[in-house]
Image (cartoon, rainbow, N blue to C red; front, side, top):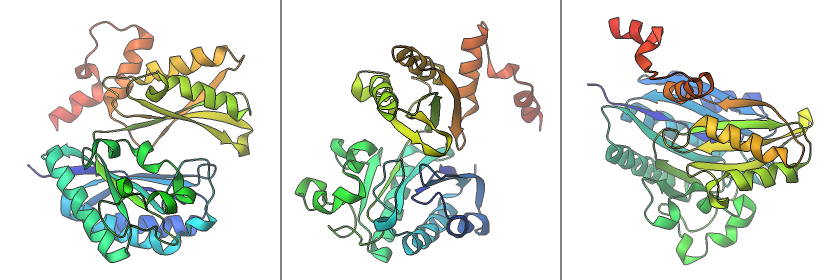
Length: 300
């Protein structure tokens, strides 16, 4: 059985199309990698890429893309709504087929070591690759963001896992790890009051007493004149998308705010949507075997 992993690197560039295409190019050119999706958001000023491939091919393409991003992106000039600490902000590896989580962790370490040596980049390991419990959560590592990281990195407890114990002058610092599939799910609100979005996010996310496998922040979508609760669902099998959507609606009511839409960033497992359909349609004993395309694929 061929070994396949998914990788979803996030880069701090969502506005300059020329830079975006240069960063993505290695994922198009290198054999053994299948580019599935890439999307850039101008308000977030962030590029999210999704691809699958063999461990060696992914490693080669990710390192090439990281080097391009480090060369092109100057974090001293970067501004966006999404939290970030580096040009190559986060690189997660997810096992898909024929790969254990332990092997994904090993790959994350290999990429982190090579990138730190070649680019003189401080790198932290997170989620299943974390070296301490305090570094498991991406939000804890990234707290302070690029502007505050020059001081944070000097603290003994925040010495990088790889690379120099000082911030790269233009590329900041990066986080690399291994985790199960994450669903990036955003819910839009018919208000331009960012504080309302922030208050709703605080109630919805786990750290605020909300849903266990949900991380959430408020985002100002300036171009549209609205705000957004931007969420990362870290385990969709235990906290479903419909739960986060309904909780945002519930919390928004207290402010007289309506939900006006939602969006998915990148790709997601089909089961995450099956759960939503089953819930809203009230389907009993629903199974993925009832999906026509699934049955057809089994026959191929």
